[in-house]
Length: 234
Figure 1 (tube, rainbow, N blue to C red):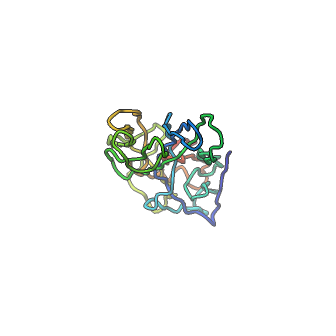
Figure 2: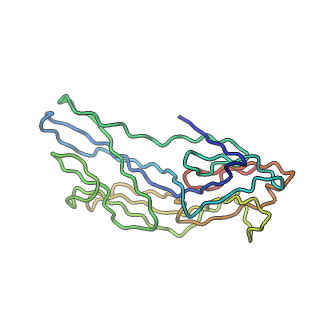
């Protein structure tokens, strides 16, 4: 499913995103209905963006600039300038239905974490074999722990246009340069998952050079809804 929300001069304010992480655990239920056993079969991650309240800006949509409209999602996160951007909706975990058969089945639960800095061994969820899966910490051997290492490495795509200073006549269009992080998930003391991700709040903000939106120019821009990085400027 796709959606896009576009604002004109009457709605020229926008946010850049911070990056969140969703963990989706697949849980196998087996045994008799009145004595169900639970075990986590797999886990996958999905990144998403939410408005960063510290990155709230207003685009200059007026007679001196070539910005016709800005495109935002329902949360006010900037998706595009002079361009309608269709954003995929975040994956939705299915509701868990009551178990009515002794046949094994698979259900899903979701745990969300939004890092503000590097963390080490934060408990995400735990499994109690004859009771279920619960958020937070349980017995060491049955708890899933998250670690996030800030690699202090900022993403700098070739399309990024740097400016030394934001001038009064600039269009007030900003983008994120997200920072690289290493995500690790462990069960007890056993490694399950390691991956590198880019996190908006681990990077920095950069202004797009005002010359691209001066009167008479016709440029359009697209940003990542997850990290706020520049995807296209032409």
